[in-house]
Length: 229
Image 1 (cartoon, rainbow, N blue to C red):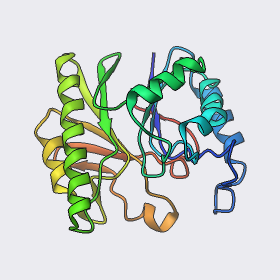
Image 2 (cartoon, helix red, strand yellow):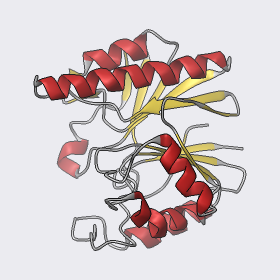
Image 3 (cartoon, rainbow, N blue to C red):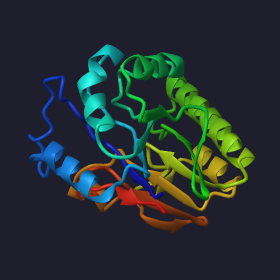
Image 4 (tube, rainbow, N blue to C red):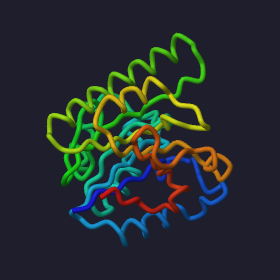
């Protein structure tokens, strides 16, 4: 039973939003499917850290979600900045249940267990503008991260954190998110959101403040789920 992670699938199987117009994204759905099937077994878990589907409403996600559901393993979704379809957890859970997409769960103010790890996290945020709305969003994400980590700690297992936004990027940290991570026994943090060779060079991977960070956006990892444990 292994734990994997990947982010930024940007699926548009039911929408007209092709990603293959971007460098390196040619045939990405086929590549992702083949890599996933060759690596992940039915007993494994894969965390998908945001930007899952380009659908605008939950009802439009079915084709993308069915594609993911049919891949091996259990999948855990967390929100990305382009997941416009995302609503309440209850609404998403109901949609998944009604459409028999039972291999998919949602990480939202909660935590899951996989082997020796407690899976926790949230979308995150990076405060680039000190507008009241940005500050409100950041504070909300900080609260959600704390809630998820608290749930993880209660399991007695090691918490591993998944975020969509990087908490440390271009040599600048989102101190509000980092303060939370450092106040819990977090050793591993995986994030997405960053695309393109130029931006990959600016993304931090490695140990920072005692936490090992890894960028797992699809194009960074070659459309291959990354082994966590």
